[in-house]
Length: 216
Image 1 (spheres, rainbow, N blue to C red):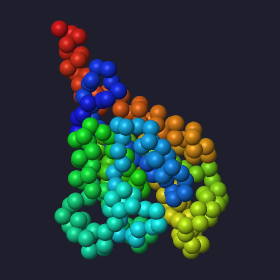
Image 2 (cartoon, rainbow, N blue to C red):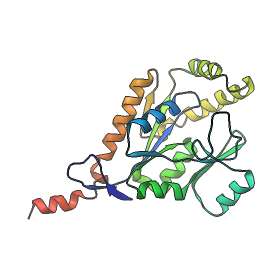
Image 3 (cartoon, helix red, strand yellow):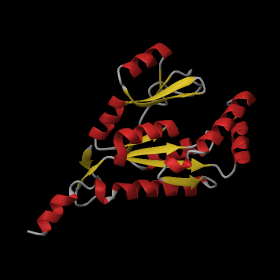
């Protein structure tokens, strides 16, 4: 959806960016997403729906929209999701209406979704989607991070590690792949990617009119 680019002195209209961050659990994706949202007022988070239970410190409508399985299935049947996935016995989905509202407000949309969601979103929106995959420095370090978080049982950590291996195998379905061995450096790279993607010629829908004016 075309909108104004706030930082562009020429006020060219451009297509909004659907900016996807994916990573195995514990690789730092959520930290980087929070830093992006704090630093960039042109970016807004897409809040997913989930059937999992709310965790201590989370807020309904901010971290996720928490719904039961019946309501989630109803939303799927009504085509209310841009994408959805089944992860660790729970379901997660991106609401179509929420994304459309963000784009209509002139902001880009940040997605914290896995490779399945990224693939579905790309099939729907193609060139408007920018996919960034964040890798841990190593799998042993990833496991250590998960253990140190103290939020999951060892059984869940083992499942997360098995899933991490599967997720990493889909790295080649992304436009950019970064290693998060220094969170500040990784964040800086992610923000650079976002700013550069906003300036792509294919997104500058107002550029054609400007060039026509030059040639008069």
